[in-house]
Amino acid sequence: MSEPLLQVKDLEVYYGVIQALKGISFHVNEGEIVSLIGANGAGKTTTLHTVTGLLHPKHGSVVYAGQNLAKVPAHKIVSMGLAHVPEGRRVFQNLSVYDNLLLGAYTQTDKEKISRQMDSVFDQFPRLKERRRQLAGTLSGGEQQMLAMGRALLSDPKMIVMDEPSMGLSPLLVSEIFEIIQSFRAAGKTVLLVEQNAKKAMTVSDRVYVLETGSIIKEGMASDLINDESIKKAYLGE
Amino acid sequence: MDFLSALINGLSSGGTYAIIALGYTMVYGIAKMLNFAHGDVIMVGGYTMFLTLMALGHPLVALAAATVFCVILGVTIERLAYRPLRGASPLAVLITAIGVSFLLQSLAQIIFGSSPKMLVQLQISGGITLGALSIDYSTLLTLAVTAVVMVVLSLFVKYSKTGRAMVAVSEDRDAALLMGVNTNAIIAITFAIGSALAAIAGYLMLCKAPSLSNTMGAMPGIKAFTAAVIGGIGSIPGAMLGGILLGVVESISYSVPALAPFTDAVEFSILILVLLVRPSGILGKMRREKV
Ligand SMILES: Nc1ncnc2c1ncn2[C@@H]1O[C@H](COP(=O)(O)OP(=O)(O)OP(=O)(O)O)[C@@H](O)[C@H]1O
Ligand SMILES: [Mg+2]
Image 1 (cartoon, rainbow over the protein chains, first blue to last red):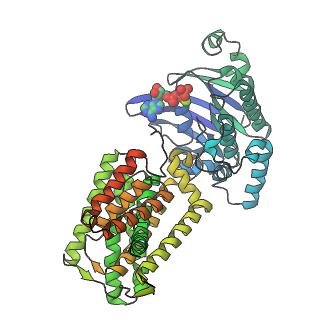
Image 2 (cartoon, rainbow over the protein chains, first blue to last red):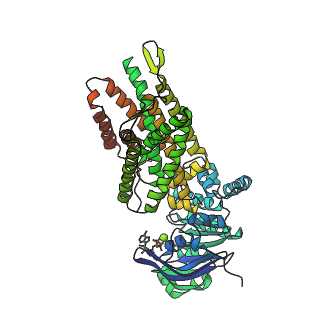
C-alpha cells in the first residue's frame, strides 16, 4: 500500500505543564473518511490543532503528503491542500458571507478558479448564495456551519479536517451535514472527522480511532467498532 | 458666527485626532495591544521633517521623508519590541509600549536638545473669509486630508484582500491563520499604516503651529487615544467619529469663556460619560472576551 496522506506519530502536546496528548499515533489514507471520537476533554480538538499547526507538539511528528509539518508555519498549511473546519465554526462575524468565502480562497491566486469554486459552493449550499451579502454573525448555527465548510472548500483542499460539525444542530441538519461529508468523499477529498455524535460518525467513516484522556484506546474499521460492546456502552448510549 | 467658526476649527482639530486615533484603534483591533508609543511616532516624524527641510527645503519632500521614516520606525518597533511579547500578559506589553515611548522621547532630547524647533517652512498662514467667518488654509487642508484618509482607509479595509485579512485577524487570529493569512505580516502592515498616518497628522499639526519638541506627540496621543476609546476602540468608524467629536467638543468648550480653562476636563468628562452609557464606546462591539 502507498503512504498514508496523513501520518501522525507519537504526538505529545502540552498546555503549560498539563499534558493533553500522551503520544498518539494514527493515519489517514487518501480517499478515506476517518473519525476520531471521544468524550469531552479527550484531546480531539488539540489533535486537530496540532495537525494544522495552531499548536506545536513537544514530541512526535505530523507528516502530510510526505512532508513533515514541524517547520511549516500555520498559515502555509492550507496552501498544501489541508483545510481545517474549526470547532464552533469560527466564521468571521463582521464580514459578509461572500467575504468569508473569499477568505477561504485567500491563498488561491487564479481568479477564474476562485469564481468557479465559488459557483460550485453556491450550488452545494444555495442558502449561502441567497445570503451572500448578509453578515456571517447573523446567520443561524446551521448556516454558519455550511459557511465554515464552504469556506474550507474554497481553498480547494485535498484533505479536510472537521471538528464537531454537527454540534448544536437539529437532527435534520445533522443528517444534512453528514450527507455533505459524504459528498466530500465523492468529490475525491480525504476527511478526518472529530465528532461527539459517534453513531453518525461511524456510519459515514471507513475507520475510527477512539481517544480517551489523551491516548488512543481503540482503533478499527467503523463497521466492526459500531458493534463493539464497550464502544456501544461508552459512546453510543446503548 | 463664533459658534460656526468654533465648529469648523473643531472639525479640523478633530480630524487630526481622528487620523491619530486610527493608528491606535487599528493596532488595538488587530494586534490586541495599546501602542502607547504611537504619539511619539508623530514627534519622530516631526524631527524627520525638520532634518529634511534643512537639507532639501520642500515641505512635501519633508512629508514624504517623514512618512517613509515613520513606517520603518513603526514596523521596527513592532518587530523588535512587541512581536517577541506576543502571547505575553497584556500588562507586560503595555509597560513595554510605555518604555518605547520614553525611549523615543529621550533619544529625541539627546539628539536635538530640549528647546523647541520652529519649522516655519511648514507653516501655512492666511485663510479665506466668508462674510464674518474666516477659515485658515491650514484648517481647510486638515479637513480635506481627513476626508481623504477616511474614505481611502474605509475603501481599503472593505474592498481589498489585505483589508479583509485585517478584519479577519482582528476577529479571530487562529481562524485567520487557518485561512492562510500570515498574521504577522498583517500586524506589520497595520503598524505601517498607523505610522504613516501619524506622520501625516504630525505634518498637519506643524502646518498650524510650527513648534517642534520631543513631547509634541504626547498630548495629541492621549487625546487621540481618548477619542479612540470614545468611538469604541478597535472600530475604524469609531475612531473617526470619536476624533471628530472630541475635536468639536474641545473647540466649542474653548470658545465659551466660562468653560475655556477647563477644556481638558470637559473632554475627559465626555469620555467618562460615554463609557458610563456604553462601556465599549459609541461604535464598539459588545463582546465577551474569549479565554
Ligand atoms: N488552551 C488550553 N489551556 C489549557 N488546557 C487546555 C486548553 N485547551 C484544552 N485544554 C485541555 O486539554 C484537554 C483536551 O482538550 P480538547 O479541547 O482537545 O478536548 P476535546 O476532545 O476537543 O473536547 P470537546 O469534545 O469538549 O471539544 C482538556 O483537558 C482541556 O481542559
Ligand atoms: Mg473539541
